[in-house]
Length: 248
Image (cartoon, rainbow, N blue to C red):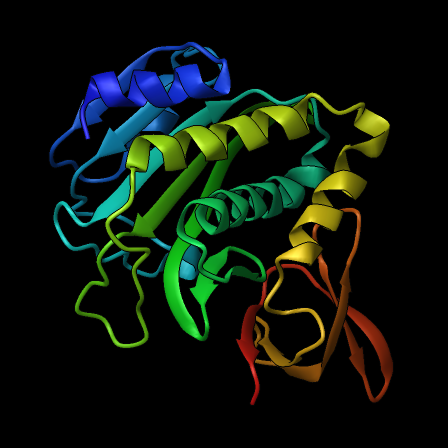
């Protein structure tokens, strides 16, 4: 892609803000966070053809095939309470899944909280960063990586040779639409959309906490804060930040 193509994607979504394109960079999220901290307006968009220090959830390394992935970080300044930040990750996942399904016809689904799957293979992921002060969200950066070509990583998948401008524009448009909803209905609408493309709900899952405790049960819902609700032998339990595995 190019900076001009990032602008074209913004135009498809009816938004306008500065864009920053790098053929190679360490991390688009790091660049976008610096821009947000410096006062960048909402919808500022950072993109790269290859990341050398991309990060995933829980400190994992993001690996892409140079030129074979769509990697962007989007600056937002949403009017949400800090407790609802998890819903924004679900919104990003649902928006990407919806856009990719429309363009490719593939059954792209979301694994809680931030992976995009084709079948059981990972085609992409979302990683959010934020700044909160005085119990107010100052900014949020939504980092996304989607494989067009699967990298040399076991269990990876790609979306194929598709129009990345249209894909990105579809994502941005869906995020804009969701953020325009009344605050009282925002979380409910996002959760409904995410649930419709979820690969996790209705599955037996294992959640492993930072303390090593393992929780096993049926994923039955997502609550208003984006937490996964798991029905266990001891009753329902909420999962906020654990590692979740789909069980066969």
